[in-house]
Image (cartoon, rainbow, N blue to C red; front, top):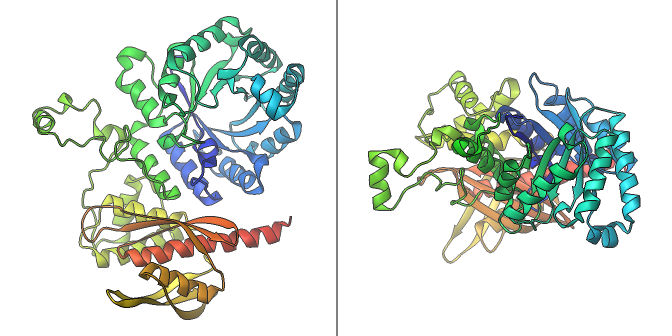
Length: 513
């Protein structure tokens, strides 16, 4: 193959990491953007792990996997046949469904986790692949903890599953144990020893526990791997996965060295990164390669002088190569619906009907408060609107009193099912007072476990984006809110979490235990 297949597992491995969970609507929004990014495969979830994950994976298969030119939609399953059945029920609606089945092959996992013999794992692997091939042609197999597995035994398993019908063989460095030179040698030896390896796509899935995930992935490519499993912003279990944007831009920027590329539309990278940050409320560190705030910033005088004379002196990539917006002023309070719709399309949001109506109302409200509306402002308000779950409680009015020597108090009015409910609360700060007032109305007492705020743009009138995690009687849910008033943004974020909790409780009641 003359290109590398990009297998995106943001919605599966990435979403499993603490703080990155997504509901079905958020996964759909992210999957649509991944399709615009033109990844080859989207691993949408682990269907048997929960009813929500099954529904989300099925929704991605139905709504994204059926589009023209859509990526393959993949579901993860253990080697149990019931797992595979459940996985197929979720992904079968896609034009290009894939079943990805896995089992650990390291003696550490066999002894302490699986409590099975090598022979039992070998048989289960072959049976699983054959069962999956009964559903679809595109079957992937992974020997979990490959970097610590006995090499000869792992190769025997791989040869057997290829003979059983696996089309992709993925070698995971599950715990981020490998070092690039060692990992490259292991991939090269697999190509030499495994029977039938020339008939399948060889893949790698590297974790970043030692900070080597991208380096290991690139080294694997140099040694014959032609699929890389990765995530946007490098999110994932523990220290994360190999970063999609770093791999794609390394291959593109150094094509003279690697001699190979991907099909990814690199100009969609920045907005994909930002969308994930908006959805999860977790933002990348400023010095993050490719997509960090400082990735194209220059402060040292000698660097600034060089860049002013010729950008190539200190920039090996152009911001426009990854679709980085220039925070250009495009809209104001006199702008109409058509202008907003056109600009949102440029930013990757193709809204129409009620979705556009809600976005337009939010935009007009923002434009009344701000003289200058930037791309980042639009990303904040539109993503905030687009990723909301069904609303039980909606903010109608908020008034806060706070200051030095004053007990902070808040009066809030909420709308529910067309009725208005109002109450007040006090606290040790204005945000605490607002949340207590909400609790007084709803009768639900939430404990704030995490609170984060950031400015979407510069300036004193910037939108404040607030992300919260709230504990409702042992159930921890996340919420997001945006406003030029950070107290209002805090109230919206708390209501977002509360609405998610109410929605989850209603669904659980409908579905049953």
